Length: 227
Image 1 (cartoon, rainbow, N blue to C red):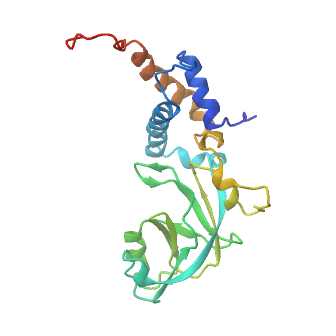
Image 2 (cartoon, helix red, strand yellow):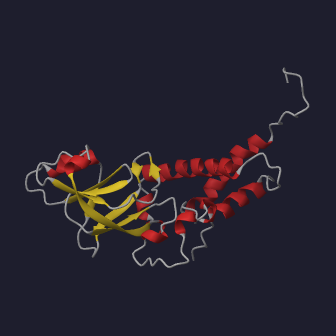
């Protein structure tokens, strides 16, 4: 049975407690510890991507619905597709997606009914492959935070590894008068790191910050510039 995914705040405080930095005069800010968490997670996720393990763990990916609209090719300098003079782009930028050394981690892009796969690739590959004679595949890619598709889709389903809260992008999302998701504190969002990697992330952070803790900080009243 899977555990309950901690929030960013809970995981940061867990690290702070491990290295005894939970008091008010801590030398490590939440952002500083988060930087170490992110760096350790990137190392392990890149390793899993390189070993082709990550995409076998389908339970770590989240699904969002993305509204698309038709735009002129001229609005995207990355497009050089011969056929239609139009291309389709997401109405809004996607929520932040974790990027490995191989690019944004997207598991799949599908039509809203799931019947058509819109192969996720780069703008270069999309340009190249759409020019192949009799190629009837659909392609998608991300530029400047927006999702692009080479064919008409009003909505698509994107499954990926997202770093931030995706509630307002969920297919069954309903906004009410009390919902103010744009003002959510990043500390209270669910941790994006796959559960199976949490122990490894902790180990890397404690190893690094353990060394940091052993370095004495100079006292304010120390006037000897050589110390």
